[in-house]
Image (cartoon, rainbow, N blue to C red):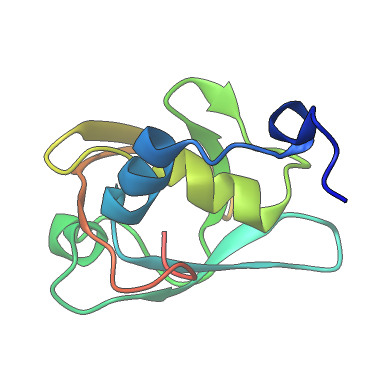
Length: 116
């Protein structure tokens, strides 16, 4: 028998957030984590907003996104931080060697969930 309070026990799907999640856009980066738990760029997708800046390179370490530190943050959360509304601006600080660089990009459609 189905309990009378089954609706209260059934998790509800947040349709609005589900739709927004499928519409989120990134900047065209593939990220990985090294043995020191730093998240770094492993590949730039050709033609992507990140590649078109000509300011990012493979092995750049992600330090900050939109003013939020990404040091010690899991790669999937870094990816989530890079995603947002198509056409919105994102600011990313990366470390290349001893040089900190700040790059501004406009989000575009990401091809899959593994690409930020």
